[in-house]
Image 1 (tube, one colour):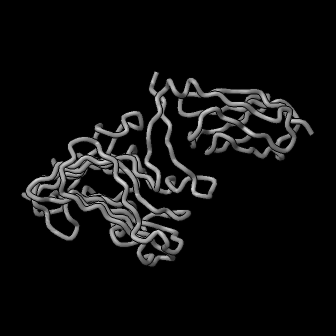
Image 2 (image 1 turned 135 degrees about the vertical axis):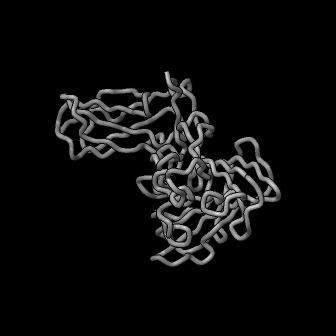
Length: 293
């Protein structure tokens, strides 16, 4: 049975995590582009390479991290022997304009960009990961961060890039750029950079199937009228899905459970017997709920 994983995001005073705003943050979704591929939701150098080319600087890699989450990462490799776009490895969310314009929406007040990387530099190259915040299309003062490093990291390594000033004004959008070379410099060698599982503020980690099998939950009050509380016996397990089915097996309510103790509003449900399901990928547990009026 496929190993079960948990995405450990923490909601930021909203009903869903700001990480949901990061497009294709785990680089799981790709589209064929001639002889190569491009990551969905991201512009990359491949978009400016002849689709019939035999070399693309951006590739989908099965070397990913955490290994219990997803199947792929993004791999960027420069080639200084090529003078066209095929020699430059760079990627950012959105379209071509996303290199210096807002590329995707954000909600809340993110303070850091997190993720995992591997880096194999050549000839003094320096990897460059940047993120910038915007409000109404304009850059937020001190709302940016950068990781510029020439240190080789042959194993997957977590990173956290804090915003320059945590007291910045509220943002509504952001952009990210990733390159295996210094954005303000030039390409020095065939440097390779892997990136996986980007998130805001809280790194994405995995929990194995054995931990999930020990999970249980209770519902109270039961019978319930306008609300009930779901109490899960494990802490820090956000982004489980809670489904409610009627006695015909029809899904009548679904939501994300971000806390081990969470109140569920059911004043829109009629009197009767329902099944409450807690689900994560292939794993699920169910309990009966009686609704009275």
